[in-house]
Length: 471
Image (cartoon, rainbow, N blue to C red; front, side, top):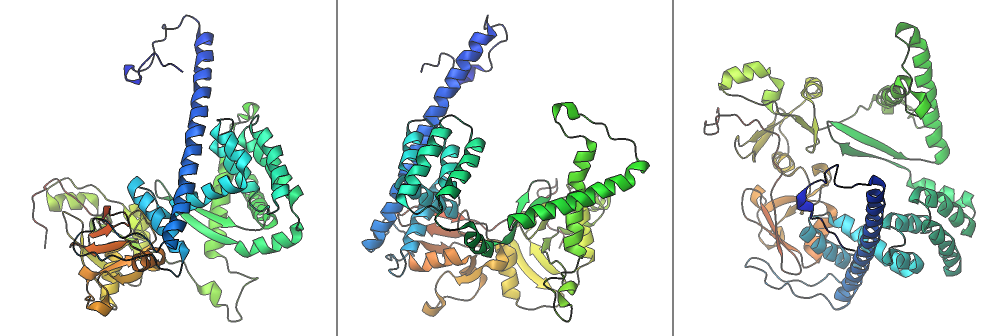
């Protein structure tokens, strides 16, 4: 494929092509070739990740290679022979830190790549030849993951790969689910009972002070909840329709009108009301204690955010931007919501930060207790391994220099690590040391160095950059 125009030349002029349909045909052909090339490269990446997983197995069997080029202060250590999982984690962490990704994600991708090559050879072959995309491959892989019989899996692959070469992933998924169900040796009833044990609720941050609440539930329950919320929203709209103008509809092209948009918002509001204010019945306690439990969130609020912005500007004689508060040390929320939550708080943690660097200097409380733990939670807010975002409340306080070997219990020798990376530090060649101000330097098994700085909390910065702090 020959590209005659450089990307640096910018967009083509409208009059450059005499026949737009000829140009369109060429663009479609070019994009088709690019998609095939991308699919082939993605297959190469899958192959490379699978090799990395196999390499971890070999390194674990060999007892691990010594850490090459480790600086003074780092000891050499082999793989912990108790678990091959740690070798996989260490290799994934090596790849993740070098590519600036999350090591859990890389380890999952390594496992997916091994499964794709080992159990879905026809799918991988189609991907390598650019006949299907990686999205198609994942659909085939995910839908057929539960099939253990090689003959049944081969029959399943032969049907769905042929479909994937002709159809979009969404259409392939419907066929793949159906074909996988046909090939299941175990009845759906017993599989559903086992799958129901995995039900859960998760929350994930979104931009602009929003978050996504997701629940994994039995299908009948999930659709039933959505239907009940829909009925409630529809009843509310009907009850209030006389008090507002008629909604403008644009239904001819299938787009949603105002009532449909309001129904989405109402479903979300009703769900919030029911979960925040309702009392459980099926899981209640004899004394009704569950109904008395209220939500708990941790908020970091810059003090000037709670003060009128005009008063703050007058006091500083400089332009001060209003900085958002932070929910659980990681999710920005608007000042109005922060003010409401702070007003309802029965006790506060007061965090003292450097006004220029934002580094946490100290923390106290109106009812003091466990000062050191709170200081480290305020300083770190998340796991201190590069790329990890596990929150502070779920971390182990780890002595960088082992306390059993004389390490001091002080901020300069403590850091919050999630259980995964705490284990990685102690039972694999990954090593760490502190270089001051909460900065951690990690050394990988291959001798690469990665620096992790403590998260900078929300803080006000004024136009008077050289002005001394007001204390």
